[in-house]
Image: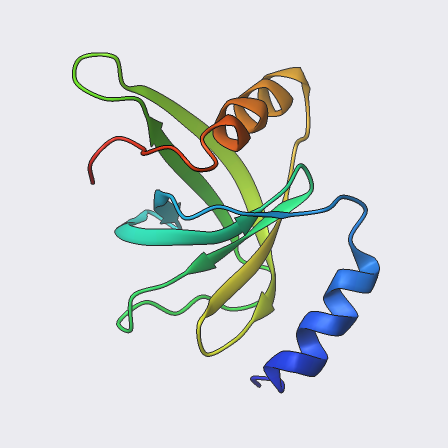
Length: 123
C-alpha cells in the first residue's frame, strides 16, 4: 500500500540516523536475479538512499537489492556495489537502508557522496 508521500517522508526522516544530501546519480539495481538499469538517486546519506524507479519496475518492502553506482568518466570509471533493503515504497520510487555496513561499504558511500554536484559515468 502506498502512503501519502508527505506523511511517509516526515515519519521516515524522524527515524533516520544520518542526514541525506540531494544527489541525482544513475544507479543500477539488481535483485532476485533481475537487473534494472536506468534508475536514479534522489537523495543519499550514510544510512540509506531514495531511488527513483522507471514506471515498469516495482519493488516490495523488505526486498534485498544490490545497487551499483558508476563514478568517473572516460577510462577512469569506478563501480561501487552496495547492498540495501527496501524500507519504503512510494509512487516515485523506494527508500532503502544500507545493509552489511562495513569499512568497504563506508568507503564506497564516501566516494558516492563526493559526487554531489559532479557528473557520474554515463548510463
